[in-house]
Length: 149
Image (tube, rainbow, N blue to C red; front, top):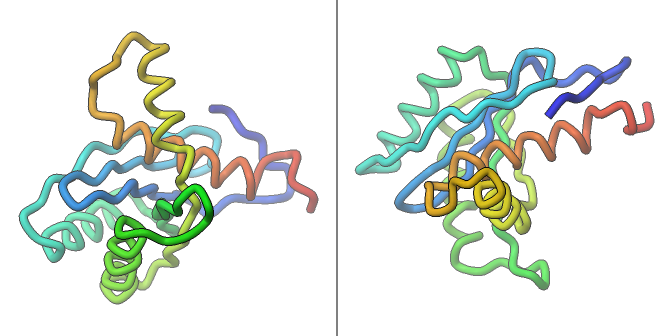
């Protein structure tokens, strides 16, 4: 995705997190916010290990903002998955001084599956792609040239 940001500069680098209790998809934006790259999948044995790895990635990649997908229900309510994300975000906020922003991710997984299917890669792990879609949507909504200044 190529975004322009006239006068509305995005944070230097954004880390997107598609949180799941077994797998966590990651994506990182370029410094100018014009591109988003998959950063892999975390599979960790403990929340502390996940937090340590995220802190390491943030330092290594120069991350300034963390976006975490919030899996609201179709009616906007919060189910078990949303409560698990909220608990994770609480720990993440305590583990890093970086701003952690919650973003509605209701459509990111579906879009990631569709994009994967269209690319002929159905059946692959879509968590990283979902994180990428999450970051792209955040940057587009908040920093695209269509956003009023």
